Length: 128
Image 1 (cartoon, rainbow, N blue to C red):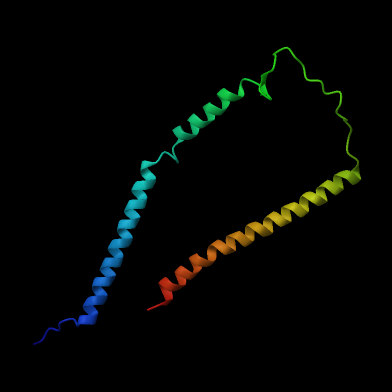
Image 2 (cartoon, rainbow, N blue to C red):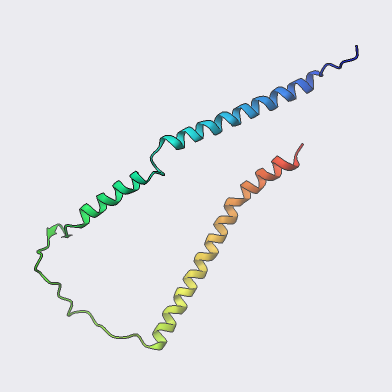
C-alpha cells in the first residue's frame, strides 16, 4: 500500500509525549487553581493583619503592666554625645564589611538556586 503505518516504537513515543503533556498541563491547572483560591496575594488579607497590629499597638504594655498616660520616661541615665570622626569611620567600615558578607551570601544562594533551573533548561533543550 501507498500509506505507511507508524511503527510500534513511534506509537509508544507519541503516546508517552501526549501523556507527559497531559500530566504537565494538569499539574499547571491544579497549581493555578490552588493559588487563585488562597487569599495570600489579596489586599484584604494584608489589610486585616495591619489593622490587627495597630489595634494591639495602641495600648502600651511593658512587662505585663499597663503604663499610665501621664507618666514620663526617665532618660537621664543615657549618655548623649556626638560621635567623633574616627568612631563614624569605624562604624562605616564594620557596616561595609557586613554588607559585603551579605552580598556574597545572597550571590551564593542565588547561584545555588539557579543550578537546578539551568540543569532543567539544559535537559529540556539539548537532549533528544
